[in-house]
Image (cartoon, helix red, strand yellow):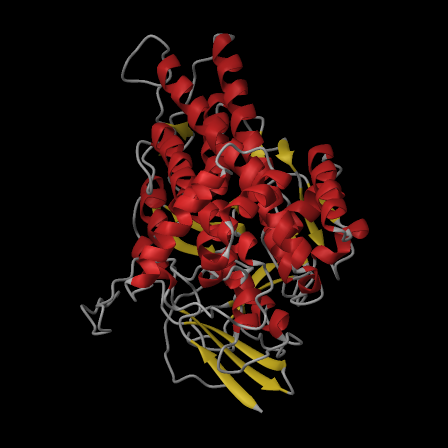
Length: 559
C-alpha cells in the first residue's frame, strides 16, 4: 500500500491537502484537509449588518462577488426587504459574468493541464492543428498562422530551460492521451483565455465599480445609479460597452471553450466512469426575476442518490425545510467539541491538533443536509434545472451528451463535472446578455428605481442569503440583535465538497470521489489531480500571504 500526500493540490488557490491510500493501482481511502483557518465570521461579530457584505467579500481572494451577493441577501432575508427589479437585473448580470469568468479560468488555467501535455505541443504540425480546430469551430483565431506563432513562443520558452507556470506538470505521463495537434490547440486557447476572462472581469467592473471586491451593493438594491443622460451613471455608453464585452466573451465561450471541452471529453470518455463519489446534490434557485425573490430563471433542487427524476424542486429562497436542515458537524475538524450545529447557532472556536487519520484533520467543517453529505456545483445546478424543466438547460445538456456519446447519468463523474462547467458557462454567457436586454427594456418603460433604502431596526432577526456561485451553493447566515451582528456563519461550496468525515464516519464529496480512482504511478498521481481539480477546489476563503521561501511573514490573532 502506498500513501500519497498532495499539499497544496490546487494550481493557484492553495491550502488544500489531499491524502490517499493506494492499493493495487486504485485509491482505497482518502482524506481532504483544508490547511488554513478562515476567521472572518469572528471579525464580523458586533459590526453593523449593512456593512457585512464589504467584509464578507474577503472570505475569498478570487470569488469575492459571490460572498457580497450572499451576504447582502442574508440581511434582506432577515428584514424581509424587497429589491427593485433594476437592482435584481444588475446583480444577475454581475453573477452571470462572474460565472463566465470563473469557468473559463477553471477549465483552461486550473484543470486543463491535467489532460493537456504542453511539451507534446512542440511536436505538432500547425497546419494539421488548424484543420483540427476548424473542424470543430468557426472561431477566427483558429488559423495556421496563429498556431505556428504559439508553437514558436512555446519553443522559445522551453529552450530557456525554465518552464515557469508549466514547470510542475506531469508531462509525458502515460495517462495523457491527446495527440500533439490537440495539445497545441489547447495551449493556444489557454493563452487566448487569459484575454477573455479579463473582458468578463471588465464587464463586472463597469457595474460593480471595480473587480474584485465590487462596490455597488446596498441593503435593498444596488448603488449603480441609472440615468441615460448622465456621464457619471449607468448610461447608454456604458451599456454599449457592456454589450460589446459580453458578446465577445460569449463568442469565446461558445466557439472555443465549449467545443474544446466536448473534444477533450470525447477522447477521455473513460473518465465518465471515475470520480462519482457522493451523488446527493443541492442547488438553490438563481437569477431572481421579481422583487421578492420568489420567481427565478433557474430552479433549485435537492437530489438523493443521483435520482434526477425524483428531485425535490426548490422554487424560492424561503424554503423552510432547506433552511432548517442544513447543519455542520465538527467531529473531524479543528474546532472545539464534536457537535452538530445549525449555522444560526454555529461557532468558530479553533482548536488545532496534528493531522489525525481517525481524529481531527482539517479546518473545514462537515456540512450536512438532513444528516447527509451533498455535492454542490455545476452538475447539481444543471441537474436541478433539468429536473425543473428548464428548456434551455435540457436542450443544452442533451445536445452535449449526444455529441460526446454519453448519457445524462454519466455526468456523475470526474469528466461530468468538467463538462457541466462548460455547459453552464455556455448558459451564463447567454443569460448575461438576456438580463442586459431586460434591464434596458425595464428602464425604457420609465422604471429608474435601483435601491430600496433600508434602516436596520432594533430587535433580533435571523436571515440566510443563498446564492448559486460558480462552485455551487453558497449560504451566509446572520443573526442581528439591536442593529449589530450577533452571529455570522458562511457555508461555502468548497465547505460542502471538501467536507471531512462526519460524526458517523461518512466521507465528504472529495474523499468519496477518489475511492476507486486509478493511479498508474504513485509518485506522479495525475489521476488524483484530475478528480479533485474537477470540483474546482478553492480553500482560499480568506486573505493569505506567504513568503516565496515558505517563511511566516506575520501572525494574526483574532480574538
